Image (cartoon, rainbow, N blue to C red; front, side, top):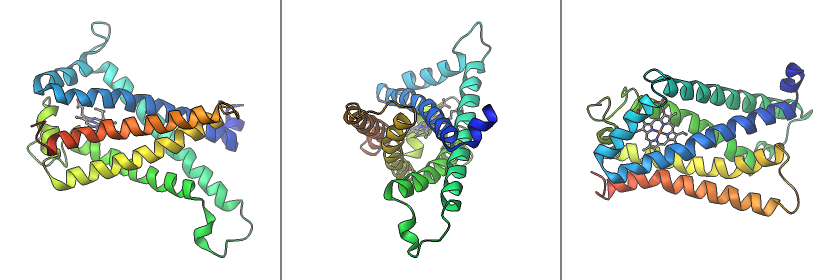
Length: 223
Ligand code: HEM
């Protein structure tokens, strides 16, 4: 039953929709958390510390954080795997190759494919930058994310990488949210307009909310 579901295109689209919505939920929370940077170093660093102690004393130090990390890794892998397999299926289903290569995929398909690749690379960069500090520009300080964020957005390439990724994220969510709603059967003639509006508003809020952090550092409001 599970196997047949996974093998079907609808099954893979369902996996994409559900994993996408899980990541979307994470991003809404992450964006709101990031905006606390405007309340200063003490509050932002305190918030980061809280992320590690949530659920205590039932949970041990960092258990909740690790639970969230595991759910996210499963979601990312499931999302990327089904996207790859669906796109292979698309290509294979064509008995004859298109004469014009460019005409093979629609604008939306190409945006989602490239956007997904950009976001995948971004997540790796982002974790190496602000979680492990491996590629961080300044002296990375564990437990002091405020200073680490300021360091990142004090370099031109830090700003470019993050802003390009956030624009890709906005486009990805705009189309992805809409597709997920269709896959999960939320679409109907009357609801489609509402769903499109919700997709646009979500994409805009997330992009603007995330970009507000580098903008804050660049303008000197956050320093
Ligand atoms: C301007 C935008 C962003 C800023 C300033 C930012 C900031 C941060 C910071 C400071 C951390 C480390 C938190 C800590 O160690 O306490 C972090 C972790 C993380 N961020 Fe972001 N983030 C941004 C955008 C994003 C986006 C768009 C995504 C996903 C597409 C994302 C996904 C993650 C993930 C998965 C972690 C790792 C959590 C962990 O395992 O510790 N972030 N971010």
